[in-house]
Image 1 (cartoon, helix red, strand yellow):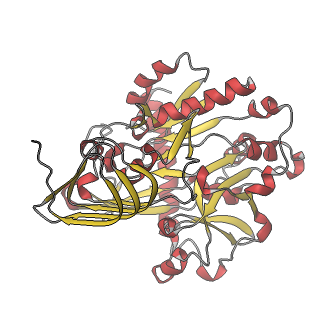
Image 2: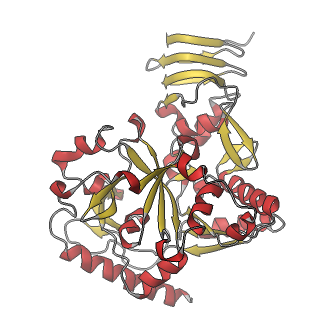
Image 3: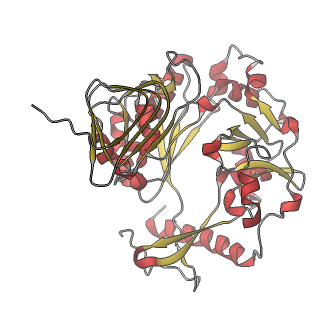
Length: 426
């Protein structure tokens, strides 16, 4: 499409969204009508895996297209470009890992799974420049741009932008397609075919804000925290009532998408996301979550996958985990190291001195050994020398104005370090 055509298409889409936003009165869900999903609507992954794999797995793979959200900038981690281009392991970026995963699938099974990157106007140019390096990687890569919709002034409900000029989040370590889930999808008889699968996983305390699956008006539906009335937010966050959350790994039938698009029946709840932009102006973004489309599809299903299939990287604390020896890298996939004795992920909280990737990298001469770590809290001006080893619970707090240098080769096990510790070069 020409630039004019794209703008026109975006305008149509936004107009429909805005009209719906103006018509909706009150919360989009009535709390009393929310039920836990029925037992059989969320299948344990082990049950799906038990079916095994057929001999002709390539036939299934050739029906698969992998779409990756690639619209986010690394702004929350102080980066200017697309988040997918942040280095994770030995100069490998998130995008490198994704390409390696799919390349490995294609080579192993002699298949032709393409990768489609859903860019935004923020990431399109930088991503296209990078794609040249993958020309001989055995993966066909396509890109398309998400719609570009205006933010709206919270008071006047008018768009903030005065013209179409473009000047002026959220990467996951992506996991490879799961062959067992794919086989489950394609081996069903046509009439009973599941059109939408959402991979969910058990909540931990760190995931209390994640969207969850509910039963509502007899259908599976995604419930996001933004849709929950204030009085019920604590209930929504409880690990007992809503035990699972959406990992945003979704399997969706392309023919079903086509059918729903043609019928104009892709009805997703509008999420009103309030933000404050430059100069303190309050705006709202009208958003729809792709997982919310689950209610539009036939025979939708949740599959409760092991947490190891879900490894979000939204902060440098998450980045430290995936860069460390806790994870082994093989064919683009990160898996918990076999040398770690228990499968749980350590809880890492790095303070504000580590928020930006550039600063975070200067504070570690090398990434510490974290195989036996349970909990790490770091606050203030702290640096780590080479080959530091962290075990058990380690808390390092440099008071305001003080600095702590953890010496090269140190081993900290169940230690609290505070105050001022400078290692001077002699």
